[in-house]
Length: 125
Image (cartoon, rainbow, N blue to C red):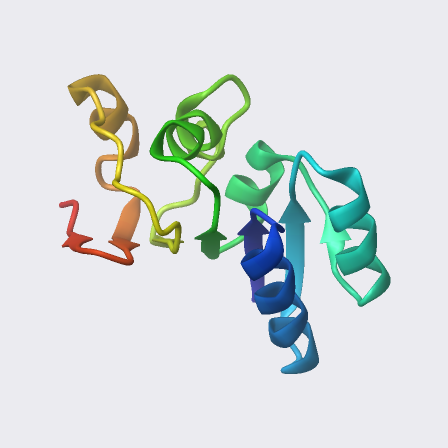
């Protein structure tokens, strides 16, 4: 099963490499191409947000702001544009979560199993 990992900063890059060492099949994305190249050299594959949504049943986000999380999920060609039914998204960002307009929540309704953040859990029906 493929896992998506978005956000390869100081913490994310190390965590992604640990997951690769544990044998996980990772698709990764980050705006910092050097970080992506480093993790790809360790065994991951680079992918866009929509491709990660389409191909991964587990997606980990580790980015520096709630607004970035929102754009990754709901922006043009974002994860939500092609996310599969039953996908688990784990937001490990250590920031306050963004407020999602009702339209964004409806976009994911019935497709996500669990949304988890460091500070709280939200279960979507």
